[in-house]
Image (cartoon, rainbow, N blue to C red; front, side, top):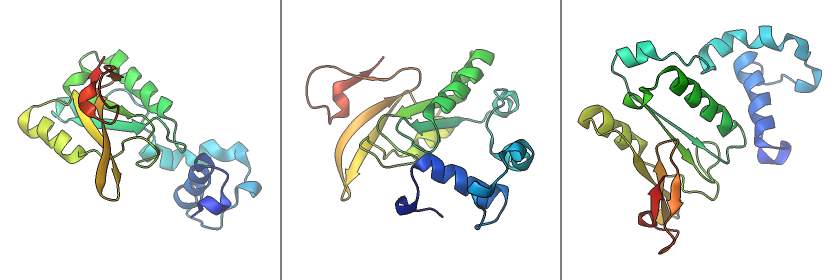
Amino acid sequence: MLTAQNTPNLRFAFGTDMYKYFVFGDPNWDYAKYDFSTWQKDTAKIGATMNAIDPNLDAFKKQGHKVVVWHGWADGGLTALGTVKYYEQVAARDPKLNEYLRMFMLPGVLHCAGGPGPDSVDWATVISDWVENNKAPERVIARKMTAGKATSARPLCAYPQHAVYTGKGSTDEADNFVCR
C-alpha cells in the first residue's frame, strides 16, 4: 500500500491501489507501464460489484430496507460530488426516497474520518433507530474527538438541507445551528 511519503495525493493512492489490489490482484502492478486503452475491459468485473450507479432502488425499497449514506466534503480520494449526483439521480427517479434513504454530508471530513471537521457519528444508533423505532434521521450530531474528548459538535442535516449557524453562541456547539 502507498504511504503519505510516496504518493502525491489521496486520489492517486486510491486509483493505483484499486488497480493493484482489486483489478489485477498484483501488488507489483505499475501504473507507469499500464496501457490505459484497456481500462474498461480491465475494470468491468470489479465495477459490477463496486460501482453504485443504478438509481433504481425499487427492489431495496420493496423489501422495506433503509440506508444512510454519508460522505465527507473534504474527501480527497473519492469526490463527494459523485455521491451527491447519485443521490439526486435516485431522487429524480423516486420522489419518495426519504422513506428509505437519507444522506448526510460532513463538512471538513476526509475519506471515512479525519480532517478538521467533526467526523465521529454513532451511525449504528442512527440506522437502528430508523429501522427498529421508525425514527427517520433528520438531524444527526457529529463530534470532533481529540484525545478521546469531544472538542466540538455540529449537526448534520439530511440532504439537501445543511447546518446554518444561528449567529449566537459558540460554533463548537451543535445547538447553535439549524437545518435549512
